[in-house]
Length: 305
Ligand code: UDP
Ligand code: MG
Image (cartoon, rainbow, N blue to C red; front, side, top):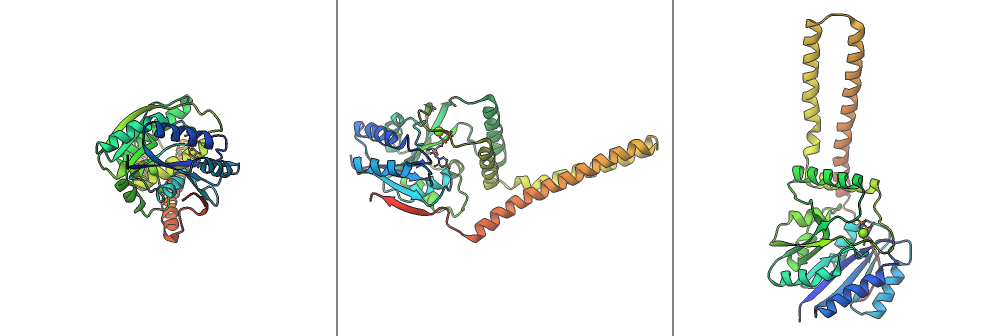
């Protein structure tokens, strides 16, 4: 078969997984008779990930590597990898084999049938705490409401036609959000269900803080609605002021109770004002960083052609 499937694999501190992932993915694709290239993107790892990539390249010439000068984050690693793919289609998957490589031939076959995006959707979200699940559900509800993107079951495990990849690469934003942008671009799409496998080595890189930052960055990448928070709160406080005035006129004039009430209302008002300033500041920060026009990531080393 002539068609080439490129696979982009972001890797951050994955020395324990790189060679295993390379061998497993290559094995599956060889068995299925699919021509492939694997592009590992070392996202500024502090362990032996880069050495593991060079060893995988020495063993299999279809394995290539890009290394970032520091950690830039998974989404930027994915985009850097996509900018180098040579394939007619490209897949993105995690290095920890939580995205099952056995699904790749099925996804490839769907692409051959003419689908331009084949999405891996999670049948089961794997081992997650109830709290994590609650936060994830809240995030998906918010983003589907604000941005109109249905991402509830979506994952970063996807296979895309060359045209989709080229389209994604024209997006100029510095803060890229892979899952959101692939939902945004449209194209003929279909889904393949998969079960999230357990991580066999290494650790998840996501802390609650980094997930919260990811959620805020994703929502603000697709919606300006949070900026209207100020308007909504302004209306609410105006109403509260009118109601308070009426109540004061109708009810008694004992000042002590009213003082506490007015004090609380004033502090609440200031807090809301600061919150709105923070939201506006966040958007301003995005515009500022975009205006600087700095590169999204810096590649400091490469291996393989
Ligand atoms: N990853 C990355 N840069 C980062 C964090 C993670 O390239 O800053 C990679 C990581 O090596 C893995 C994938 O992104 O291949 C998913 O990360 P992880 O397994 O930690 O996330 P989880 O599966 O827990 O959502
Ligand atoms: Mg993982």
